[in-house]
Image (spheres, each protein chain N blue to C red):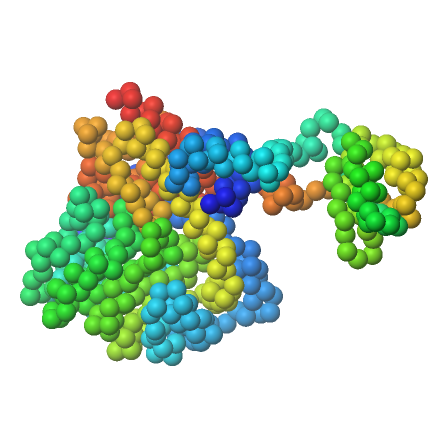
Length: 160
Length: 387
């Protein structure tokens, strides 16, 4: 039941508790309780909207940065990860398997701003060995949603 | 020459569909929320579409064998056994058709003609009656009752059986009512039919869209299997309406006759669709389950919404339709649908389009987005509070 609730919220978190309750066939109170519990247990961490900033006058540049680091004794990668994710410019950070260690997403107002952030903040961190910056030119799909596609009902009227 | 006089009487006697006029109306209107179209709003899952594309790239553009590609027929048999516990031979008992619709036509024509009666429990999908008339046979309407949640009851069947009855049509999960039949419901019917020489056509296109318990077919009863033609397909469960592909399973003696009609009328089902269908059966269980889950949420939303605005509505447990009772508004189904469309721009289909006994009801489909459904309920509520 909780998983189904999460599936519904992951798709559209603006549904009201009473709508969700009806969809799941349970009482509204139960939905409220489940959500509260999921929030308290840090399973639901937030309800951000998915925005195509390209269509706004808010200029945002996104870069994906591969970072190689030396793990620290006793703390592994966590310490350096913490140093990096504290920056508000960093919107995403994952530890990776393969050729590099950390995958960092950085957002800024211009390519220059992002490049400076990498040069002045990220690269100089003590255990960082190297960085490789890739700027995003166009986003096609994020979190299962295709950006350039507006749902349009193309069904024609047929007798059935 | 008066061309009209030259036309076949079997065909001209069939009136045009009553739903047409609404479709003509909405073509000229903006912002209509249509709860009128009986087809999934989902696009065919990508893996299935891609397989169709690959088959074209590889140049598979020839006819398949008349009965359908043997690989597909084998997958169909595996599927029917895995999902519905029905065993058929891929070589002799399966035919791939141009949608479930062709299968309905084949089944009726293989069994019934002038002098034969075909029992059609109504409200029902519009094709059964038409195909029966085209075959020269006589359709006999059986009125299903809303107090029985539109299930077929033995006593209703007893009343319409005559010496001429040849075929009984069953269609559960049902379009337009959303009704289902469970094992016990069938047991009564089977008991009654056992010693009678009556064939059954069971249209199970909506089998996957069963929201309570498991889908049951009358062919699951051993004594009925040989005399039941089971129709199923890909349109509803796999959201493949436009591909035009379905199938029919039946005893080899019936199959031989259906194949004759099929091979002369259409040769074979579209090859591209057949390759896509193989992928659908092999690798799409998760996609189907996700769609069913989504339909079920919408079903609850609509049922609750309609009841909330004062529409009487029995709980539909299959397909993707609700069939609310609008009699207490004092309007006929036609008036209700026309006013709702003109005043609030919501399209529902009048129940009498599915047989006379559908009068007093309307059909609404929840094969549309949650946002559309919520808005449609709101508008319908506004409409009801005004009248």
